[in-house]
Image (cartoon, rainbow, N blue to C red):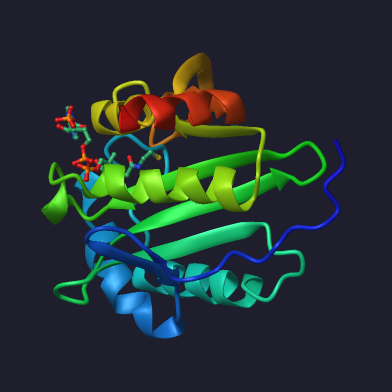
Length: 195
Ligand SMILES: CC(C)(COP(=O)(O)OP(=O)(O)OC[C@H]1O[C@@H](n2cnc3c(N)ncnc32)[C@H](O)[C@@H]1OP(=O)(O)O)[C@@H](O)C(=O)NCCC(=O)NCCS
């Protein structure tokens, strides 16, 4: 069961249309340009951040890149053809010994419904299982976040539960859906897709 060693993730990760790489501080404006859009936060309890908040987030993200072992991977998804940052991927090793992880994903509203969310989340899940050899990987989103639910279902993740009213923000209660997938299920799902 024990897994004392966490091999560093090899970056960038390349997918069909994207390069998924570490952020640098030069990315603040590119990130701010889409996370300032309220549409992006429609189904999330957090509010659209200010440019200063994006800057401090990226400062934290960049400083955390040096952590050893590195468990958090908050990564930029860059289009190969234009070089533009169009979203982000999150791969988090929550518990090394018990091989538990989480993935997260987001896409600039300008690029929704073009398969980028699925491409980013698929790469994050593949890294979680193939590289980090995790046993269970979870993802979460608001119960009305149809796009996110669909992205997770398409990757073979199953609905595990609904945490009701776990946050109070912006004048209302927010619930969270939990999706998850185990290593054996992911292996089966990948085999099915091949045939
Ligand atoms: C969730 C999110 C990443 C989806 O990104 P995307 O690039 O539009 O996703 P895809 O194009 O890969 O779509 C995947 C599937 O979901 C469907 N879908 C996407 N948005 C949808 C919506 N608003 N309503 C219904 N279905 C939707 C697509 O049609 C597609 O289904 P299909 O393959 O069966 O045709 C994007 O909406 C987003 O960034 N939202 C804000 C941040 C967020 O909610 N992150 C995740 C949870 S915290």
